[in-house]
Image (cartoon, rainbow, N blue to C red; front, top):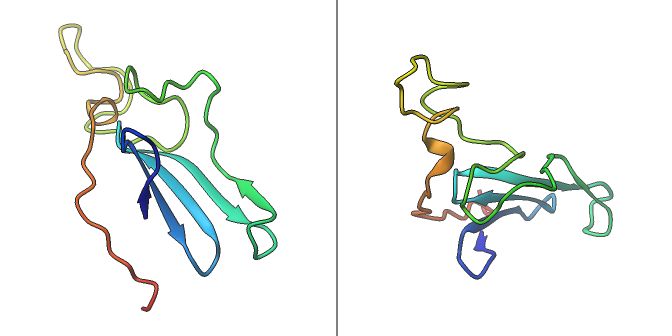
Length: 106
């Protein structure tokens, strides 16, 4: 596992045996990439997630695409005066990566 960008806002998770990787942005805890290898090597890969070309990855708004963390509601808030953002607050906040566990020998 590694932090990929200059701001340490992206975590890459790698599965050594398969060569698969996933990227998680700490803003919104959104999975923005899941790549598998199609030939058992890193020469041929396939991205499985959609990420809009209009996605903002700078923390200015929720990421458009990937697998978002939607909590505590899905969709728009119920009441007119509700200040909860659409799909809740979890996808528009920064999250912390607290620990890493290597299970490659398990």
